[in-house]
Length: 387
Ligand code: SF4
Ligand code: SF4
Image (cartoon, rainbow, N blue to C red):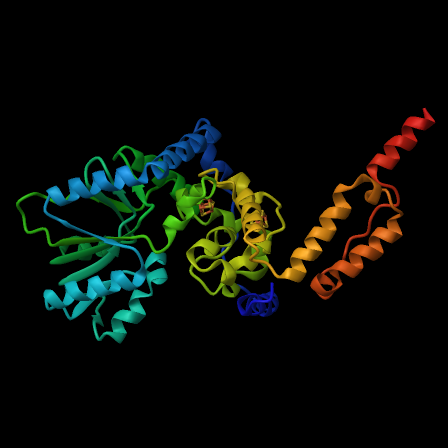
């Protein structure tokens, strides 16, 4: 695990441990859940199944959405990655002679790095401009060809809806089938993100036929489809970005956002970054977890985050994306942990062996736990013979 990214991550974690962190880790939604739902577990299960179904049929839903949206004379642009998206966006702005845009920041905008790159290309950002807005749509709705938009304020809503040119961006996985689905996902989001069942100001925008819509939508993959190749990892695409998993993660509470050096941080970063970035550059993240399972328990989409982190460990091990020396050590440890004869050796012998194997990896940061004098099997045999 000797990549530069890993070394930077470790030194950033050490720095983060010493600094006060500006992160919200309060998570107690019991009261609001009791007031809102009769059976919260059932609601979570229903939402998770529905979203999983949509992700499994993402190709059909996107095609249906495209058809309906374009029928109403709005434009859809399909973008594989950020570079192609930015090229097409600049082309559009130049064609329309737009020199000033009103860009509304969001996590996805940050992932795209739009703010910085538009400035470099001498497109002015003006937060009051009504000529052209760039805004992230929360969901696309396939059946009606509509966009679900969520706003932070009435002013934001007014600026977006009254702009002459409306440019929307959408991560490829944020697609729902029916308008009726919105209430379920928005309520779960509000409760888990903001601890309230009150929904943000929002609207459903369906372009109108035969009117000068001036609506451009960019549906952007940015490597999300890499997760579709793995049946279990598809579940990660059902995430509704509520951040609840971060708030219960003991590792995130210790290190915060900074060491990730990415817009994805916390438990989901450990799962998705090896697919969104490179496996080699992000493989260390699947060891950034103590497998406590807190995130699994609270995730409103029932995403088995811990299982996915373990699956990532297996993937990097099987694809030999792990140092030869580390692979050898893991094999050696496995050999000693699965053979009864070796497990029955004296505790001091096993302690010495594990200390030698793991010394260079963890001795500076962690105490290596010691083996019990007698293991469970030996105690059981002893107990049985004493009867
Ligand atoms: S299982 Fe891992 S990622 Fe999830 S809360 Fe625990 S330490 Fe964090
Ligand atoms: S993984 Fe679950 S808890 Fe975490 S942000 Fe996504 S939906 Fe929320």
